[in-house]
Length: 109
Length: 115
Image (cartoon, rainbow over all chains, first blue to last red; front, side, top):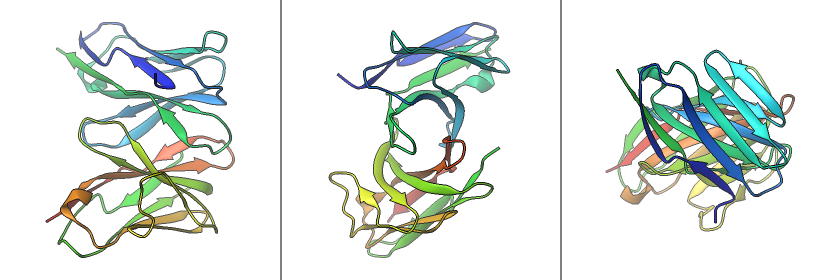
């Protein structure tokens, strides 16, 4: 069993739909990260969470420390949101990240 | 926001030659940088962790004499692929940890093709 599990692996949505990607982890963490990797390969850090909820535009990330679970929500999805979304756990300051397997999202018109 | 500049973005080289990839944190100090390799449709695979002024820590199975990492300053780390072979062809990406915010910022990646 991987230390960081993500679901679903693949997701297709129509434009405007509300999207949820889930992440469960089994390690003790200092922070949980949500990353976005576009087809060109570049990776953008979306959120770094250690508790509660964060919002940035149409993106919302939540974490439940007791249940070791985090979710990434995209409201009013758009084709430009099509990317691979990766959750990753850091276990200490400047520690290496443990990655989930990623969720490939395709948003169609 | 924090930016990591990675160069080159793509490179084609002949077998047996060496290629250097640079990662530079532009507006923050990065005590620690990470180097990853990624094959198509696969997860990022950590190759090594580099700390400014000290030797890099390599992951199991990564040849340190083949993948030379230098982290000479708080803003610059380099990865040199020595005596490149076609099987080294891959996407290489770096990440820098901000010593103040503890956030991780990724470079844009380098697509290496060895012919």
